[in-house]
Length: 219
Image 1: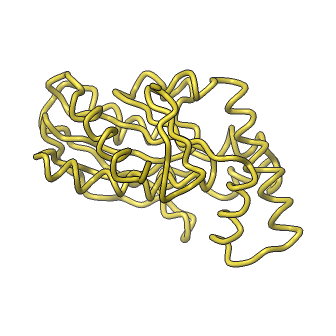
Image 2 (image 1 turned 90 degrees about the vertical axis):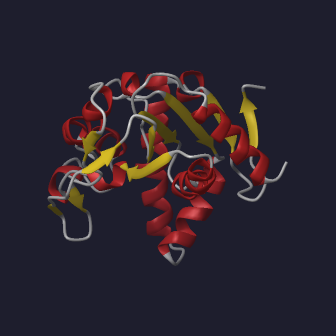
């Protein structure tokens, strides 16, 4: 199956959500699974169907580098436990969506990763029929799992995750491979052991081939 039918199927599932308030949709998955690309691909067809789409990423709700690396740069626990400011993600983005107020005033960014500092952003108004697509790792953590109206999990093999991460980093080295294995892959294993994201997601997609993803749940 090519990507277009998969995108269309996922869009139908999103548009079928009920509630009378803005919908919060998570695109979950391991590092370099293609989450951002997939979420971006959903936006245009949803807007064509009349939805108001707002994009966000948990990467814009990170903690300062000193906190992220407090356990060490190669720490899997540091990646899983200390990477993101979930209080900010909830208070600025997810809580307003769940409040029942429309339009919901949300902020889609709280931290500048490159500058390693918090940022203040203007609120975005999300109407009752709006859809907020949020991509990121660890989206079904206990702090977040009840906040989503729909969770889509993109699954890739660890070898493919590593290959894409090295391409994204612009090179290959023993240090980069060690970092990806020790921090990112091992951190995601901690997540899988704690919450079983395959079981929790409404839709699971094999995204090993970016051009031809396959929906594996529901079958």
